[in-house]
Length: 176
Image (cartoon, rainbow, N blue to C red; front, side, top):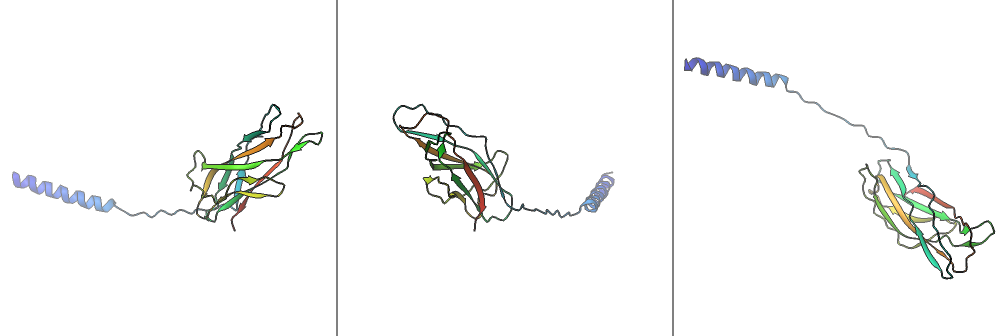
């Protein structure tokens, strides 16, 4: 009886081993990943600053969050440039556009990015000529990145009351 059970178990074990070997197979998966042509930029809604004149110069700041997407897949890096007109009112009064005091960067929500390595020194004065305000070094800044500059402007103590506007031209450029 014991021999019969051992023989039966041996046959079942051998059959299972053969069956397991018969269903095992290898599969190779491939992935074709394509990049986009350039770096894109998403701008926030219009930032606003408010001041109540008190006779003293006032430092006011705003921080627009810029969404930079580098989906090229090349790792060659990119730059953000800004040009700005002075703040002017309809009567022709004006004050300077200001300076970029600093920039904070982080991966956008829902994105795995390579955190940018920035080489720009601050402050950067804003003028009508585009100035580099952020630079993602090679092999950094890939994916979706939020770049948030803190822009500070001085409202002079002798400013005229009114509504002032400055036009900022913000662009991304590929690193050379």
